[in-house]
Amino acid sequence: MNSSRFKILAGVGGLFAIVLLGYWISGWGTITLHADKVPLSKVIKSIERQGNVKIVTNADPTTPVSLEVRRAPVFDVIDTLAIRLDGNAQLAYVAAPERNQITNVLAAFRSGANPGGWSIFSAGFGGRSMDPEGITPDPREMEWKVTAGGDSNLQSLFEQGAQKTGALFATPESWNPTVAKLPKEGKTGSVASSLAKAAQGQIEEIFLITVRPPRTEEPTAEEGPRRAPPTVFSSSRRGQEGNPEWIAERVAAQIATLPAGQQADAQKRFDEIQAFWKELRDLSPEDRQAKIEEVRNNPEIQARMEEYRAARDAKRTPEQREKRMKKYIERKKQMKNAPAAS
Image (cartoon, rainbow, N blue to C red; front, side):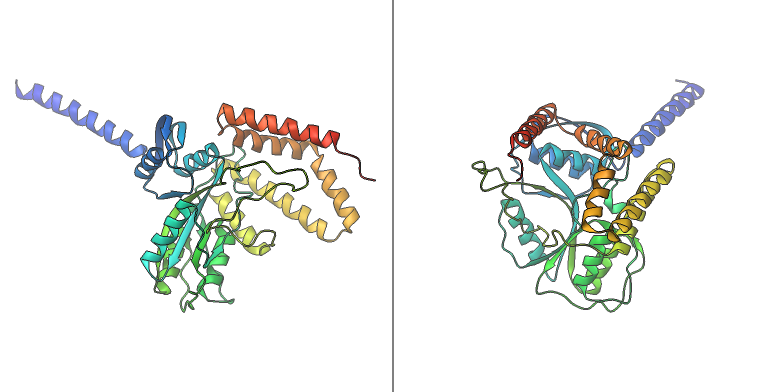
């Protein structure tokens, strides 16, 4: 082989290698899965390996899962997996003075045990997506600026973080040191790690997938709907109002993670929601209820809600969608046949 031909082949080979490298790099931070009734444990391992994340769930690891995604965002895949399991996905930071405390509480969650003794700070699962296409932004990309001037103990700061970022924070109830120096603004994980380090503790970033345990029997009409028993990571803040300024910061940070072309529309929607709730506060109970019904029946609002439901529904299996439709029809029948209030 003459030298010129060798140089041409070497050049073509080098170009081919560069193309392959570029294709490989472009897939960083995304997930590709072809799972057809594969055990949940194997699906989770694949997501963890490709996404460089840790997933912890109380679901049965042998549960068969079907999931087909190609170069999809990491958290969107985790969110879809949770929906396929009829559960919820949430970013969580578990902190403690000793590493073994974190290991033990995660093991308890996996097994369905609830040893208690932990303080949980969470803004809940609702209202996570400002994306009209229903793609849930990666909560790790949220910016968190710690507000100074209030309580500077670790648990108060984690409560602030939960409301400002939407992540869940967990610490032993008995561990609540004062944080002398607040960290600079940064990504959620970076700020959380700095706080744990300042408190001379350990912390682990995980994605929790929480599923309700199966019911052994259906509740009777007299009993009403039964709530699933709380897990060790269930929040005790159910029904409590948060700090409006912190919630506004969370939404602003969430909007900032959207593509530039979608941010203005998302901000407009949020501004409308804020104005609506502000108006409600000044109304009498009767007028407040009338206003809620007026908004609920607004065709534009109904269309937005339908868009969101459709986007979430698209992540379910055909069997799940059929099951949900049957439940919806059954509820409508029960409402229609319910005796009128006297």
